[in-house]
Length: 132
Image (cartoon, rainbow, N blue to C red; front, side):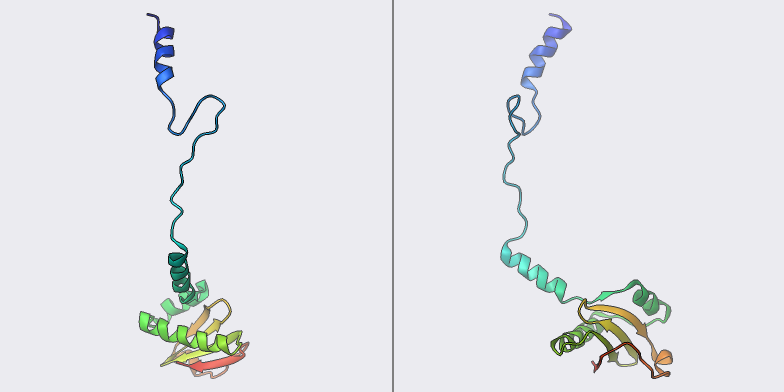
């Protein structure tokens, strides 16, 4: 038996996974479609209830050592939701000794200030304020 005969004999039994006859489209089984509609809605609500941070705000929080905790995030998100219900766009959110400027529509903290920056008492480009 020659090498060509061995090749022909072996190649007949070797087919890639999912491949059919020559010219046939590969069979595609039903792929895992992911979450059910209910699970998707639950995940979507969880993601929508999160506050996002601009890179500038993250830098300010780190450099000014502003404590950011899940409890504070929840309070800030509550303020954002209240402001959103009133139609606010850009707002000052005051929490304890810190302040945040937030874009309400995107639920994004734009910048953060600690007590030393609050001494100026001037906030521009906002249309609302809330104490949380």
